[in-house]
Image (cartoon, rainbow, N blue to C red):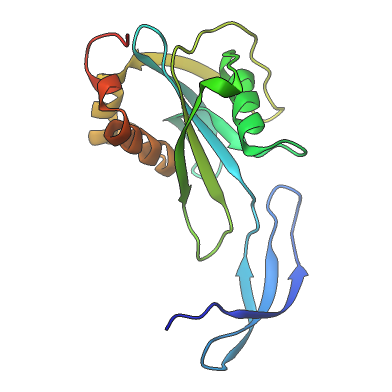
Length: 190
């Protein structure tokens, strides 16, 4: 039978507000104590797959300092303080793309964990159909974003050939292709 670890103590040892780190003392199911288990409590993340009335997926292209590369991915970001996952998804979508949507438009795609051994981060994905550019972008100080729209079938091909390779974007695009295969046909969405 599997048993969760027992946390004996926990200490915030974060080097900065940009990257939280916690040092736990844990007891394993066999009684072994590990006094220096580090992980990052990064918190919730939201990601949105916006689909325009013409059947195009809206992507964002931006620099990511961890990899020191410019990457293509779905719009998203950290859960915002004082906001629910859904409110954060709507806010990030508008801030990064200039698309204002309503809570009724959010179609859940589920959740994923990128590295559950070293972070507590869960990314929640949503599909928004009939997404329209009807607002202004509002970037965080560290953001410089180029918005790109491409036919859904082409986006799926870009996942296949490795042009889109950010884990959560790939996961939600593939999950959407299973849950909503109709959007990845080459015809416009009806």
